[in-house]
Amino acid sequence: MRTNKLNSKAITSAALVLAAIFSQAGALCARGTQLEYSQISVSLPPFAAAYRERQPSLLAESDAFAEGIKSANRAVSLTRTANSPEEWNNVAVAWLEAATWMQAVPPRNPRRALAQKKVIEYLRNFAFAKQRAAATTSNLPFPTFGSDILDQQLQLYLSYLSAFGPPDILIVGSSRALQGIDPRTLQQALAAEGYRGLRVFNFSVNGATAQVVDFKLRELLSPKQLPRLIIWADGARAFNEGRVDRTYEAIVNSPGYSNLKSGRRPSLSLDDFSASEESDAFQARVYSIFQPNLAKNLKPQKFDSDFFDTSPASADSLTASLSSEFQFALNALLNQWHNVIDSNGFFPVSARFNPFTYYRQTPRVPGQYDGDYASFRLGGKQAAALNSIVAFTRARRIPLVFVNLPLTQDYLDSVRMSAEQQFVQDMQQRARSLGFIFRNLSRRELTRNDFFADPSHINRFGAAAVSRALARDRSIPWPK
Image (spheres, rainbow, N blue to C red):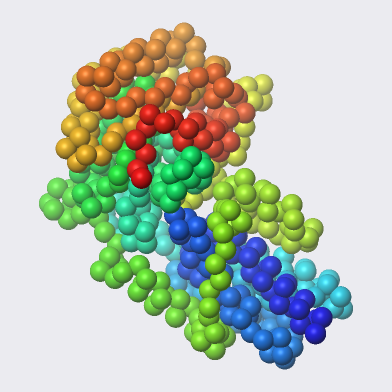
């Protein structure tokens, strides 16, 4: 009976850790781990949930090591013919099952040492299969908009909409916003302030100027795809009329833009199906490749999202509680998924800016030679785009909050400082006259070097600090 209890506990623990890996990576094979942060619930992977439901007597009939080998053999067999994203996804799921079984081998079992090595081996194979699944999904379901990051973010946002519907809060802006506001941290911080159950998505794009943001909100997205509140996070560079707006020019000259102008809005191929129907159909196909009888026993278990937090900081704390062998494998996997856009559209960068080492590899560029501040002036097309956005959001009764993101003191030489000060004064005046909210976060406590990945882009630690600072701002009309 003791062995049975160990098996059950080990399988459940392994499943939880592996499910956390799934959520952290945003892997394609995460269809078995369903997350809904606003409802603070999560389901175990299907095979783990089914095993947890089994009686001890049934557990005693199976050998975890042998089951792991069987699952690994299935994965190898599937690999031989895998070509499509779904086929590589099935390979990844099989390797995950194999790793879970091996982790379930009890500590006192003579095969334990070998099983732990197999866990590492199988997780590496899982990571490879996941990469292949992602690599084979490079074809977009819609014509390109001339920007790889816009194409990727749009596809992710459409997928998010099919799963959860429009977010309560949508973050837009350039790469500074993409790295600068963490949706999950903002959700958690808002919940602590009493605004529970809000969903946040970061739909920012590298190089996005005011014209690009205007295009996304007024033309690219339909009214049904808009949020209840918009946070536009950026700075002076996005409004510089003197710079060439290459991102916007690429968009308006793209096949996707032509398609949009002819009345064909981007969509995913399964839009006609509900999220639950699509998920059920996909899971049924996945279950059929291994242990078909487990689908009948599936009874997902719910866990509090605080335990199942998948933020980078949570992943760091998770590894501290694992065995050294399993921690090694988990760290290897998580390292692959640092600096990758997460399922909420956020780009978490772990690097910390150190001027002494940074400028040994990257030349220091004075402000007068910085293209982002070239011929700096406000007004023109970028100001017109701002006016258009304000009028659009007012007509839709969507509150608009513009957040001026912090920069390092090292970055703000006299040229850049002058431009930023002009911008803040101009935005404060426009906010009063046009009726949107302007928040300046360029205060000293948020300009620490260790909050930045480079002189002008925030890292994930700074993004968490910015997100918490926003959540504490009672003047922002957060949705209720």
